[in-house]
Image 1 (cartoon, protein in one colour):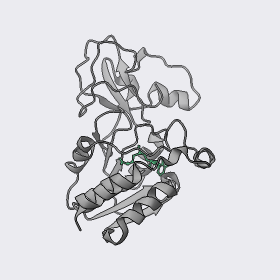
Image 2 (cartoon, helix red, strand yellow):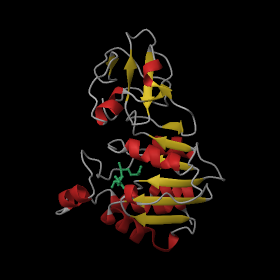
Image 3 (tube, rainbow, N blue to C red):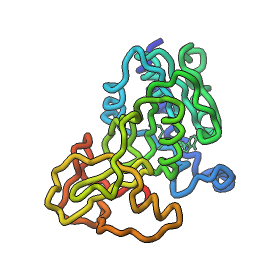
Image 4 (cartoon, protein in one colour):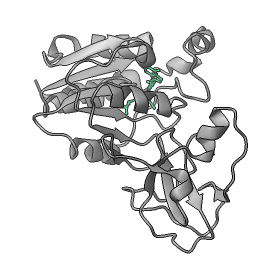
Length: 250
Ligand SMILES: C[S@@+](CC[C@H](N)C(=O)[O-])C[C@H]1O[C@@H](n2cnc3c(N)ncnc32)[C@H](O)[C@@H]1O
């Protein structure tokens, strides 16, 4: 199979098909709890896909969450042991499957369902979540960790570029961060302090103010600043994290 040729067919056939503007989409999105553009299909650029491809290898079993028109899933299937691609939108994935036709590789397993309703298949080593408008990062994070998945490749926290999150790593309690960027398991990112450590790598934390807010505890005892609205501070060492705005919660 010539993957590039299949992707050319997909590009021609799925992008002009703006399914989110179709009648019934609003009700469909509400039924699935998709809000704030979360249910909109839009492919990313080649650079984003290349960043993902360089972080997967032949031994990986990949779970592609929100797989869209399957173009990245197809690219990944040529490099890894197996890809499970889960896409909620039947029009997007149905059109894509029609275009792919008999070029569908055997190691690409396509599921049309809400990824939050689907059990994580056994043996998944890495998940891909290219979904800048994701509103459920924390749920994906917890489910993947519980299933033994080791890495999460995503643009959902920093909204720009692609980061590889080590899901096995222990998280620092947010309260222990004195000065610098943080990225939380709930999906929130931000800066603690006065900006004296603005070039720092983000520290992986848990129990951040957004987590507490989510749990109904509104008391954030420390001074925090969302990435958005903290002028003059560039992002930490996340691939291409340039000018993104803050993640969920902030
Ligand atoms: C911005 S598009 C990106 C598509 C694909 N990941 C790519 O990079 O080409 C996000 C996709 O996630 C899908 N999606 C959002 N929430 C989902 C969910 N809970 N379960 C499955 N798919 C979901 C949307 O329908 C949309 O097709």
